[in-house]
Length: 400
Image 1 (cartoon, rainbow, N blue to C red):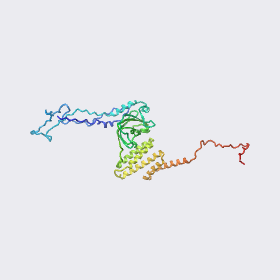
Image 2 (tube, rainbow, N blue to C red):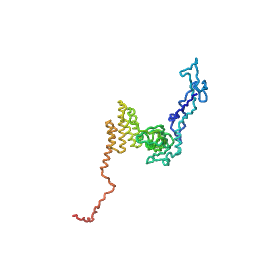
Image 3 (cartoon, rainbow, N blue to C red):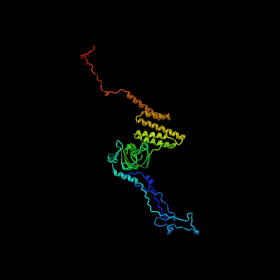
Image 4 (cartoon, rainbow, N blue to C red):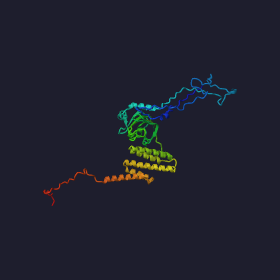
């Protein structure tokens, strides 16, 4: 009898259901008990006469012939039936158990590694900012790295290259607020938090590392509604999956250009709100690049109007960021560019007035005379005036 081996099916069938679960929270670190997930893709009943599992033929099936060839089933008149001559091949299937991972297996491994670092308590992540075994990625020691598993020895990401990472992120109470099996971005484009912007370029492909981030390198002082509280530190576990050259600018349809421009402008607004004006400016410039990039098709009248409005918004935001960085010339140039697109734009006119006022105030301060050290102190003459009835002082030599 012929036999065939059927390869096992994919082991990651439960990943979609795993991603659909809620965030973990509670008194200790660890996920909540997952809800029951009904298995998908379960095979239906076997067709009649198709054979059974290993260990014997199914009901109604003839056994193997003594010569090892499949038996023939003769029809009326003794002739074989069907185009195959009535030949039936029975496959002896091995007993294969397909292991389906649990809904939260990745999260459980993450929490086990987290518990190996510290125990949950009122101190939260505070002790980890002073613990040994971490490397500091910034001078203020508010972004730290700890390697969990070394990489494969490949090159680290270079500027402009695109990376794909797997990310898990937790709060101090163990609440899972980041879960992305494949996050793709270009470091330096401002599309992710600063912990990933600065941390991922230090990794090698295949490396797994923890990144401990104080709020300036996470979601800032405001946090992120509704799951990240204000000024919340975060602990990320990052796996660097792939590094590749950045994509060349491709012609994009107008709807895609509008979506990318709006997304990057919103990212810039996020950086601006947290006081990182340099990062905000980078995001605004990337938004302009998306809006002004090559077009796959000419925009319609409504799309052209939306593109024009988005450009003006980005230029006004660039001017505001340049003002915060005290670069008046660049701020004025951004205002003028916005006014060339929309001459009556009130915000651009206001920004230009702010730039001019700031420059005039700076010039006035430069030209004003230096103030006295103590304006309340009375002026002292080198010789006090003589008192009434006192003899006059002797005349100096040479005076008449």
